[in-house]
Image 1 (tube, rainbow over the protein chains, first blue to last red):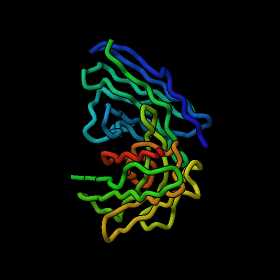
Image 2 (cartoon, rainbow over the protein chains, first blue to last red; image 1 turned 180 degrees about the horizontal axis):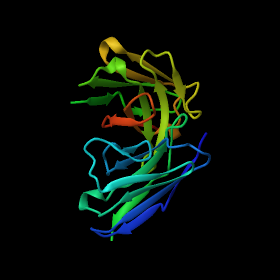
Image 3 (tube, rainbow over the protein chains, first blue to last red; image 1 turned 45 degrees about the vertical axis):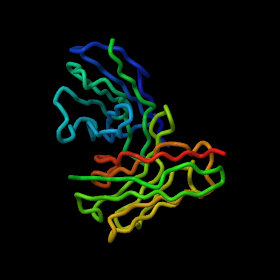
Image 4 (cartoon, rainbow over the protein chains, first blue to last red; image 1 turned 60 degrees about the vertical axis):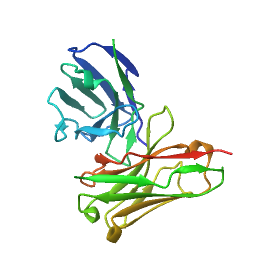
Length: 106
Length: 119
């Protein structure tokens, strides 16, 4: 199985900050990388698929980049509704998720 | 509006069985692959199983292989997960999630159903 490792595991930031979350795959997954946002008590929500394509309805302050084994999710200017847990997920083979990054208010 | 609604969760003893259902609406169910994903309390997401549109392709995580069985009924717009020989470590919220384009991109999720395995 392909292992996905996110960093950091948790992050404190303020509204308006630019935030970057990193995801590393245990082997090359080309561009088969997706990002999800999950708020407490809610189901995950697809934000970005195929490394950099924004899911319909997702604000443009979210962006993704990378290829091979290293990927990033960037939020350009944090909004109050962005405080949540973020997961990366590889779709190169039977899917696996990263362990999550909890984004908290500073 | 795309909707996925899970049901069938509850408290079951170790070694017991449970059958989860996922009712789909708002889209052509037979045209989409579907996955089950679970989340243990306070933990991250774990993929459980995948079924293709016609049920011809099925995959399971190693942690549930041989104990869980995924199935679907396209005529009833429904997905199922038969869970046997349940263990404490199967305790989790179970989500069904639509596969965006048979590409392991999960674009719609249900609200989840909680399975608790405990004596």
